[in-house]
Picture 1 (cartoon, rainbow, N blue to C red):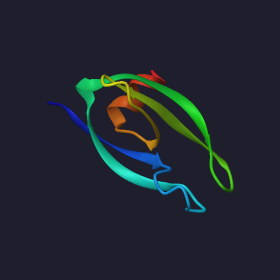
Picture 2 (cartoon, one colour):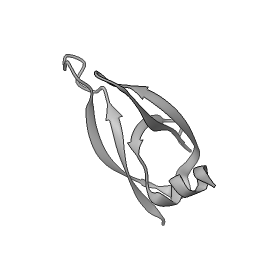
Picture 3 (cartoon, one colour):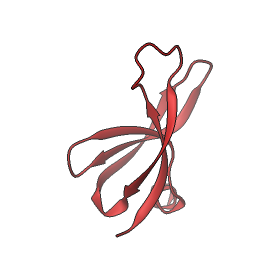
Picture 4 (spheres, rainbow, N blue to C red):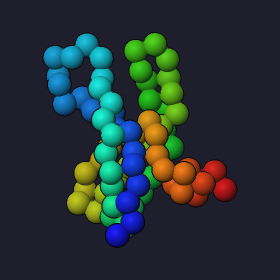
Length: 74
């Protein structure tokens, strides 16, 4: 297994005024696609990633492992 740590934007707490960030570890072998995106935050727009996994779940991440970033920027 090949794991990587991502910081994911979570809107789990619907009543929260701000979006929360959670660190998650994904098995990189189960990631189907990663797309660079712009994520609007409360005060600014930041660069992030749209991650889709083999089970169909989708995540917005504000940080990704270097191996993913290197693949996108080369």
